[in-house]
Image 1 (cartoon, helix red, strand yellow):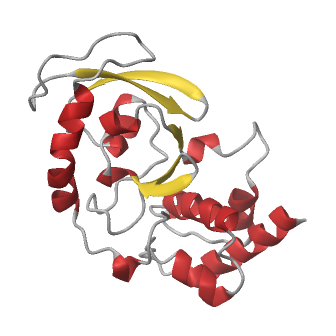
Image 2: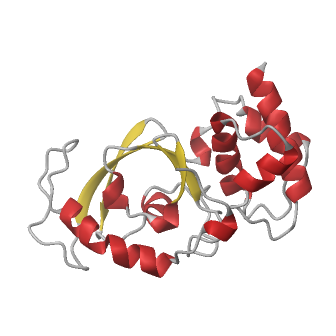
Image 3: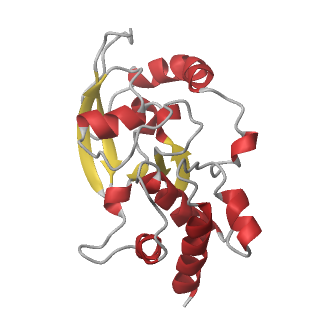
Length: 202
């Protein structure tokens, strides 16, 4: 399920993390198939679990506590700081990444829950020096100012185009509404998404 429109997102980071603690603890008890190493016998807050994540086509091993979010694992453990920490409550969308092709807010999921998933961050979009069509469109349309939300906007836009939700300006606005821009570049963002969609369809 893609990022829902902002007004439909009624969960806070606290409630989501509370609801997933038990599931994450259970996940942490399982062996990490990629590394072949068994996880600790108990998943207390201070325990460390070795997790193998597939990020931008590469297998990456990180040692994290079960409560560490995917956002913090990407930024603090793997150094992929293109994924931004904005509100840290699932409200702004600055931390949006793709997991198995679907956009999610990485501050609302735990790293241990994403073993076996294919994670794509903004660093994984370009093909060498060749930008992804969405990245190029954001530059052409000057669809950013401070840049704080830009990587999340781009990741959400990639999914929006792939999902086919670009039939009109109103549709783009609706399906991008889970990503907030404090600089109010919405008109430029919508234009960039529409432009990228046209380029992808060629």
